[in-house]
Every structure is written in structure tokens, then in C-alpha cells.
Length: 77
Image 1 (cartoon, rainbow, N blue to C red):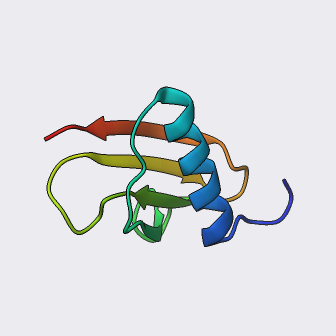
Image 2 (cartoon, rainbow, N blue to C red; image 1 turned 120 degrees about the vertical axis):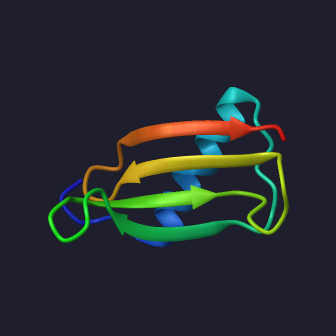
């Protein structure tokens, strides 16, 4: 991908990854763009499902330029 991802594309990637792993992807979903290292790093999207509750959260970090998944986790509690 030559163009950077937008928030909707990052959310779709995270939802697909969660479905593939059998993780629940619950609303509301928080999508934020951050730098890997403040002021110097590359941009990444951090997508968190079930954002306003405790537990049952899926968190996926996605490279904003390539769309590659950098990290993913499911927190049951």
C-alpha cells in the first residue's frame, strides 16, 4: 500500500484479525493514530474494542503505511 491507511481501514483489519482468532470484537471501538516513538517514530493505528469497559478487550497495533499488524492481544479480564 502506498497511501497511508485511514481509521476505517485500520478498524476493518483489526476486526478481521479478531474474527480469525475467535476473539470477540465488541462495540464501542476506539481507533487512535500514534507514533511508535514520540516525534521520531513511524505512525501506527491502535485499535481497541470494548473501549469503555473492563476486560474482553481486543487491542491491535497496525502500521499506518503498510497495513501490517505489529501486535495483537486479547485481554479477558
